[in-house]
Each structure stands twice: as C-alpha cells, then as structure tokens.
Length: 249
Image (cartoon, rainbow, N blue to C red; front, top):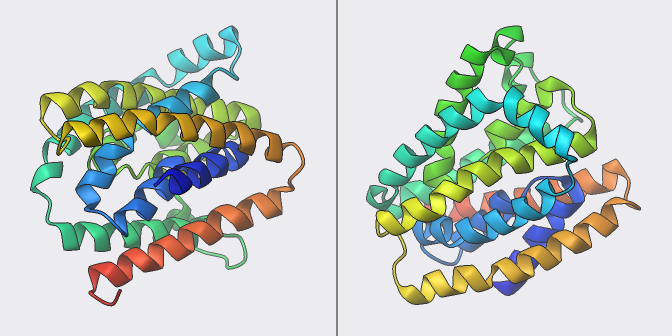
C-alpha cells in the first residue's frame, strides 16, 4: 500500500492530477473498493494541500472567487455521494470504477480523434455560474462515492489555464472537497476500523514524498513522457478493475 501511495503521489506531482484515481483504483484491485475510497481521503487532502501552496496569494484569491460556484456545488454533491457509498455493492462498484478509468484514458488520449462532446466540450454555457453549479453537483456526487474526479479535471481544462495555474486550481478544488470529506467520513462511520483511519493518516507521509519527487521530475520530463506514464498506469489499473468486476481476475 505504501508503494501504491508513493507511485500515485509521484504521478500527481508529475502530471498535476492522478493521485486519487491511480491510488484508489490500484487499491480497489486488492481490497474492498468502498474501503479504498475512504482510505484515500486523508492522503488526497495532504497531496492537494502540498500542491495548492504553489499558488500565489493573488492567484489563490482570484481562483477562489472565480470557481466558488463550482466548489460549493461540488461540496453538496460530495456529501450526498458519500452518504450512499456504504450501500454500494462491491462487484458493480469495482466494474464501474474500471469503466470510468478507461473512459478517462480514452477521452484524454490524443492519437485517435473523438467527437468534441466526448471530451467534455459543452460550450461556453459550462463556464457560466449556472454551468459551474450543474457540473459541480454531478461531479461532486461521483467524486464523493468513488474518488473519481477526472470529470472535474476535464471540465477545468476548458478554461485554458497555464499548466502551473491549472495544477494549482485542481488542487484548490479538491482541497475543499476532501477537507469536508474527512469529517463526513467520520460522521457517517465509513471507516471500517480505527486501524484503517490510522493507516490513512500515516499514508499522508508517502503521499507527500511522492508529490515532491514528481514535482522534481516534472521540471525535466517532457509532456509526452508525463502523459505516457499517467495513462499507462491508468490503463493497467482500469483493465484490472474491469476484470475483477467481471470475475476474470
């Protein structure tokens, strides 16, 4: 589990996203998916706290105001998603997580051209406050129940932010979401035991180390190599989840 957290943290530091997806999906191949989702909450919080520090005070203030409707709606959706997490059956959840993972890889890759709608190109309306509320609500619901936040990442890409600012904004959004998820998980009794909770807290250490390593690699690695590493990991994990959901692995 420590190795999974380190690899996921390095991936996030390298590409600016992927920690929750890589970490949760990899753990879900070997432990109960619902437990994997809850276990990753505190490490995700630590990772995003580390990344959001890269924003200047002015960027932090501006981005907080600009994306406030998105964050607020996502917070509400996240609480609802966590409320139904404990009632989700293991096998369909594992299969669903695998399909979502492979779907993200399919829409994010650049070798094969896909229709514009498949990549989340939903027009200028999505950038309005009303659009942010709609996207935030649905995305928060999915993130709260599965740790899958790729739909939020795809949405934020339409704002054409610089890579550094994009990484910071993604971290800001998920920092807010996971801050409330820690309390909600305890309130709803989602942690199977105190041991799992303690292990989750300890896992924040290798997560932060992995992010630091990934940040250093980001300065020397090309965009092509970054994408190859991230999408390669997600593809392997996605197929393992689908195979597990279908009873093939």
